[in-house]
Length: 383
Image (tube, rainbow, N blue to C red; front, top):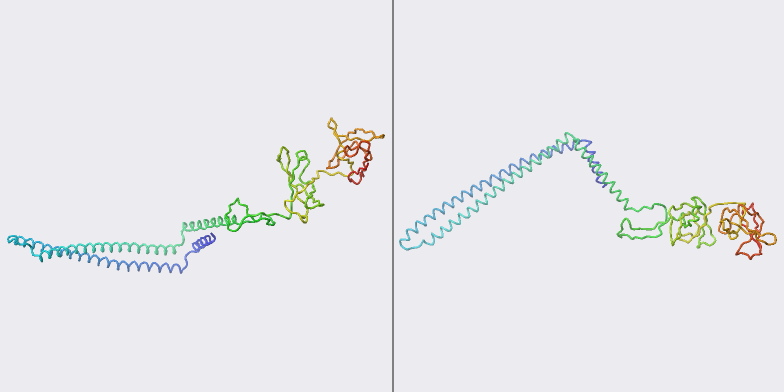
């Protein structure tokens, strides 16, 4: 395709530049040669045709002579047969043979004349064909010279320009096809798996290899529909991996699915977390991970264990506060941020008050909340 474009552009430039003097000289020489060849062929073929015509005439004359000779012998023999019939005698053998020879001579002369006629017709056809060919060569040479002298016509320039455009389009198509046949990585990465071998028959849907970007990792987690409203893009998260014990990797929420996934009647939403910073040593694609998404932060607040908070029949949360004499009193509380183990109490309790946690201690045992409001550290509980 590239070569075709170069040829088309060269032809266009040649037309635009006009004829060179050496081209004109060569065209004049070609016309002179064509005219000379036309004359030479005309003379030679005319002579051959005339020779063939004369040969035909000679053959015709020979046929007439053979016919006349046969006619003479034939009638002489008939006259002799009439005379011999009176004496009951047959025609002599030599007379009969002479008549046969004369007849064969007539047949041979007829064949020779037909061959001469055919040779004459073929010579005439060759002369006419050669004359047309020679004239066509002369016309071509004369037209070429006239074209060089007059320069390229507008039609020739338009045709040459069209050829250039066609060649350019063909080159673009070929380049596009070549680009489609070349695999280019969409990002910097590492080839982890090769799925095709050289000379395999593949299609546009055939996977060739697996390319992994090991410079960054992400984790897809499923968040229950109850919690998804609290998850927002940009929130911080913490990732722990079974393969890397004791390592917690910071991450950030990058995508929150708009459509749910339903599995065994449970509705969840996919959330994609991108790990922040350079990958930890030993990190591999496909590892099992656990994620904690930080939906909110609070410091200097009062926290109690989640198991200490219960729900009343009216749907409001409460805790059981230990009164003097170890009596329990239900105290409605207003909750704030919730974690996996603890929950923030906005109002209803004061630091230092004792609450009862069912399932942790038996009734009668006390747990005192020791919360350092200024540090924001988790609540420490002691009997």
